[in-house]
Image 1 (cartoon, rainbow, N blue to C red):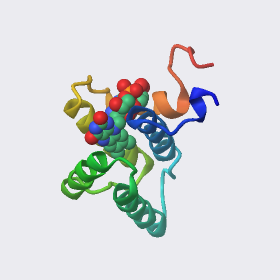
Image 2 (cartoon, protein in one colour; image 1 turned 90 degrees about the vertical axis):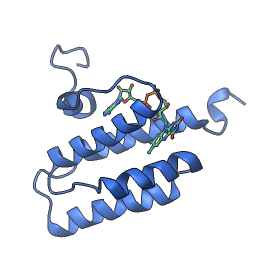
Image 3 (cartoon, rainbow, N blue to C red; image 1 turned 60 degrees about the vertical axis):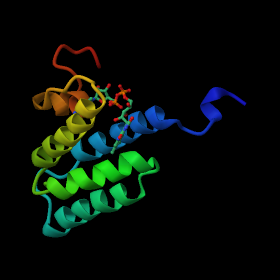
Image 4 (spheres, rainbow, N blue to C red; image 1 turned 180 degrees about the vertical axis):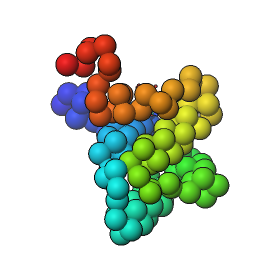
Length: 116
Ligand code: FAD
């Protein structure tokens, strides 16, 4: 079997998960209904319960207890998630990402056209 057919290690799981989560946030409605907002908040609480890396999940649960999901608009959600990811980046000694660029990274592509 190929390497890509093996179980995901912690970093592969992390990269794929952030890709999904940031994409989901960048496509969340700009003006969600009450039920979309509360469902998205519940999604993150459930996600944190079942994320399949135990130390990651425990820290993420703590972090979102202190900083609960902000789900009243797309921009709020994307910024909130970017900040949660930055908390993990700092913990791991990685650089912080500039959260004003989160939609460029995950939805629109860079302004210089490099993703076109
Ligand atoms: P990643 O951090 O996976 O990021 C992928 C891409 O996202 C980057 O290349 C960049 O373009 C973009 N990006 C970076 N920062 C941001 C941001 N703030 N907002 C938006 N986009 C951004 N690993 C551990 O070792 N210990 C942990 O406790 C741990 N906890 C985790 C908790 C969660 C909820 C998740 C999803 C992952 C966790 N990880 C943890 C994995 C870790 O965050 C990384 O995914 C992994 O180290 C691989 O890092 P990477 O350098 O490839 O980039």
